[in-house]
Image 1 (spheres, rainbow, N blue to C red):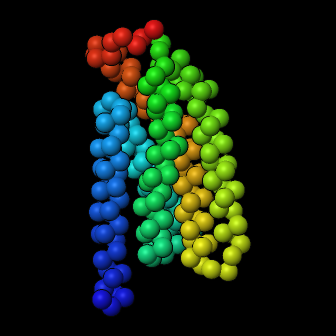
Image 2: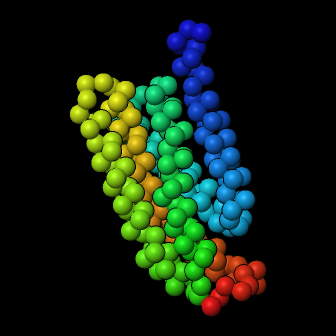
Image 3: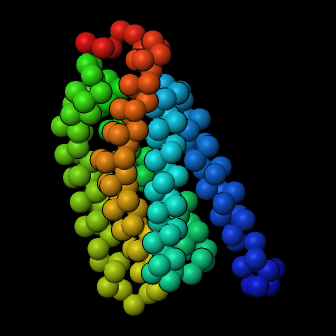
Length: 177
């Protein structure tokens, strides 16, 4: 396949594979969490990937096989930033505010430590001569940054809103503390 033809195919393939990856992750999450938690996590994964794509465009990163692979991998890494907080919220009792506080106090430090160790693990890639390694660093760095922001700020707000709606509709029994 000529390179130009591959370039024309990479955009639809990227969208298709990102959606398939997020759908697969969501299907697995449904086995372990409820529908609301899965939906909130899936929304956050989409937000993280769209943020990475947008910021990468701003940084003038070109879409290549390396970028494509890193972006698909970022979905798996992003699950880590979101799911710990979602699990903490899901397992907590009380009001939405109490659940958010419990989730962030219980799992926030672990998520931050995970982000720090990931960043330290990829930091040396930034200083290599290889453009592929620098691109790998860029995408993973953006994954860490947007994963943290989304997992620690957006996800708790989404989970709170969904929980409050479920309580008002009478769909959340037993865990109100």
